[in-house]
Length: 426
Image 1: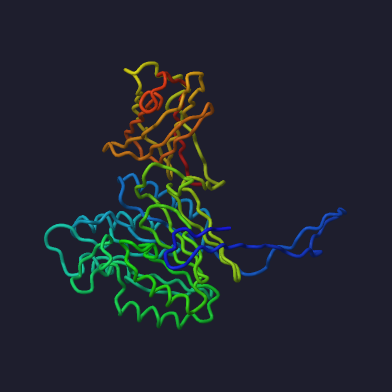
Image 2: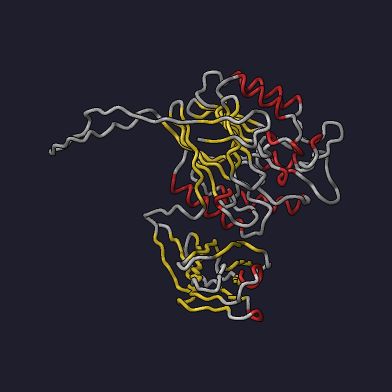
């Protein structure tokens, strides 16, 4: 059951799904049993993946993207979509082209076709020599059309562009409602395209900005939503930009989803609030479709070889005074030969009778960018995981939350272990 609390163009809607299958004699066995097993559905089905924003964070986000590509190749969907912000952008042509090549070099490793969506990082120009329409030309030259559609297994995929800019001045800004409108050219194209989809069981729409939230995104999405809902077979709209995974509700039969990050920056890591690196996996079967968010780092090819190297044997740690309320660990990643590698830092925060509130942690990359942060408060091991490259330098900072935030008697202790998991191809 879902509750709609954010969709600005409809009220609260509850959605319930029911499942069931009849029992049939299709089991071949030499044994007898009073239990009936249900025949699985024989409807044709397919899957596709959706990558979230890559940009807005340190270059280490490219490692997250690499890991996602490796995992999606293991899963083997039909295709991969994105929701935009493929490059860091906000720059001039030379730097933009470098970032474009970095992104494409990684996603071109996918064993299935992938389809881009343009976001503000992909098209905003900063600095001298700004051309008309900023990076729109570079995007269309190297990634593809700003809006387009295609059919796959009777379903349609429609990509929209949410950064055409102010129709009078051409200014691009996702902070100004007057810049968040769709041109008559794109709107007319959308109407004409939807005429082609009349017999499709599903139409899926992809756009960068979640304009349905209103506010700084203006109110122009109402018109777009009306166009989409009239055809009665648009099943879902997927957007990015907010760097947060969230289901924004069901309106007129259309499900509205936001995808979080696949390498981009986010605030304090909180998977329960949608703040974590992931990609979505969508399964389409008949009149149904199912969406699952897959955390990056959770899929392993069982045919691959995983080797674990201990970088720091299990060791005790302690914080026993206000003067030493912070511990730091310098971590040097050794040279390794493999597809990818993940550092795993296990921290045990022993319970005590002093009102212990736990630890905060921050993991910093060589440029002093925080690549992971959070709170540790368990007497069992809690694991910090981060994709790494050979010979990379990292810094782990543990801070006694009792001393810094609560005024409780300082003092904390536990154990720590640091391991490196290297994944090798089968």
